[in-house]
Each structure stands twice: as structure tokens, then as C-alpha cells.
Length: 177
Ligand code: HEM
Ligand code: HEM
Image (cartoon, rainbow, N blue to C red; front, top):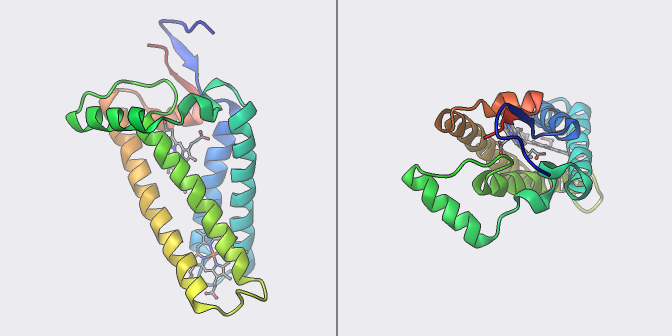
């Protein structure tokens, strides 16, 4: 596909955007209900798992920048980008940049791990297992920490590239070049 050199270009398709903000809502709900609203907590967690499953499929059949093949970097690409980012001269990417991509893969994996460990707690095997509960809680805290870094990076990159990346995740559009 030939990309326009000026104007705005549609980067994130509707499923990607709906997925992102629904995942944020599910994670926030699961987090906030983790102390006392058991049913809500479990529903939000399972919904997050379902969203990640759909997003994974979409990563193979979705539009160009939704595909894993478009953004999952090789270790070499990641290291090169990280070096450039540390020097403050990283290139702009229309889709996810290599560092964002690694964070995205980490967040998706963490949701799966948290959901699976949560489900295990409801089975005969995991019922009342304190270690499992601690692992589940620790994983949720690690994921929340990663989310803070993810949001900070999105803001930093928005300032650095003079482009509102959060808005792009809402309306789907980015500057063409
Ligand atoms: C529970 C919280 C969050 C999780 C689990 C999460 C996860 C993700 C995932 C999986 C993607 C990849 C989207 C895709 O290709 O389908 C993504 C991208 C993105 N997220 Fe989040 N996110 C969270 C919160 C936020 C928040 C609060 C913001 C902003 C205020 C934000 C801003 C962005 C942006 C700007 C991108 C696109 C990054 C890029 O341009 O490469 N995220 N996030
Ligand atoms: C994004 C998904 C999830 C997040 C962020 C999350 C987070 C947490 C956190 C932070 C706690 C610790 C609460 C505390 O003791 O203070 C917790 C407890 C728990 N979670 Fe999850 N969770 C998620 C998904 C799930 C799922 C899918 C299930 C199972 C269906 C589940 C079942 C449980 C159970 C049984 C507990 C122990 C509740 C208790 O008795 O204290 N969670 N979760």
C-alpha cells in the first residue's frame, strides 16, 4: 500500500481501539474490585482474557498495523531502537515502535498469566492456596507498574514526536509523515 506523504492516515482500526479501551476498563474494574466484589472481579478478569484472545487472533488477520508481523521486533531491531531512544534520536514509527511492542507483548502475557492464576484459585487444586493468591496479586501489581511505564512512555513519545498518541488510540489517525 502506498502511504500518503501529507495529511492524516488511519493507523489503528476500530477493533484495535475498542480492544484497547475495553481492556483498560476491565483491568481497572478487576483491580478496583479485587478486595471485596468477588463476582465483578472475576467477570472483569475473564472479560480481559477474552479480549486478549480476540486481539491475538486479530494480530494475524487484522489491518496492517494491527498485525504482529507489522510490529513485533527482532532482538536486533529492539536493541537498535533502545540505543537510539536512550540517545534521544529514535525514529518515528507509524505503527507500534519496537519498545512499545515489547511492552504490549508483556502486558498481554501478564493479563493471561493473571487471569489463569485467578481461575486456578477457583479450582479444587488452587482453592485456599495462599501462595497462588500471592502470585496472582504480585502479578497484578507488576502489571500495574508496567501500565504506569506504558502510559509514561506514551506521553513521553507524544511530546518527543509532537504527536498525540493517546488521541491516535482514540480516533485511529496519525500524521502521515
Ligand atoms: C490497564 C491499562 C492498559 C493496558 C493493559 C494497555 C495495553 C495496551 C496494549 C495491549 C496496546 C496495544 C494495542 C493494540 O495494538 O491492540 C496498547 C497501546 C497503547 N496504549 Fe495502552 N494500555 C493500558 C492503558 C493505557 C492508558 C491509560 C493509555 C493512555 C492514557 C494508553 C495509551 C496507549 C497508546 C497511546 C498506545 C499506542 C502505542 C503506540 O503508539 O505504539 N494505554 N496499550
Ligand atoms: C486483569 C485481571 C485481574 C486482576 C488485575 C486481578 C487482581 C487481583 C488482586 C490485586 C487481588 C488481591 C486482592 C487482595 O487480596 O487484596 C486479586 C485477588 C483474587 N482474584 Fe484476581 N485479578 C484479575 C483476574 C482474576 C480472575 C480472572 C479471577 C478468577 C476467576 C480472579 C480471582 C481472584 C481471587 C479468587 C482472588 C482472591 C480474593 C480474596 O479472597 O482475597 N482474579 N486479584
